[in-house]
Amino acid sequence: MRVAIAVWNDRVSPVFDTSGRLLVLEVEQDAVRDRRVVEMGADTFPAQRAQRLTDLGVNVLICGAISRVLEGFVSAVGITVIPWVSGPVEGVVRAYLLKRLSASRWRMPGCRGRWRHRHAAGPRDPRGT
Image: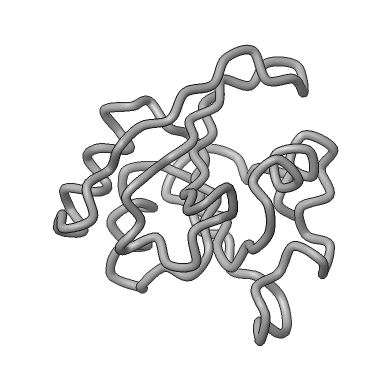
């Protein structure tokens, strides 16, 4: 499974729509097998961002805020979106692997209630809940 995290200065990027970098993780059996940083380009259109994630083979996107339009494009290509995440990237990676990403400490400030997790195809990823 490939997991992408929008990053900015070693933290989850506050807004995926303008995020210029992704940390792409290859996850197998609850462990990171490979990782690389990929440049996204901050000025791409929503459909281009979704296509870039598809080209990278991403299954799950972890990000901060994301517009409904972009979330719709990403979900439409079958990628599970785990939005409203905040914190240091390495802490978020550990929380995801331990299935503890839904803890309130990883929620963006001002985010109340249940997180939205949307996807178009495939089973719901339990790591975000």
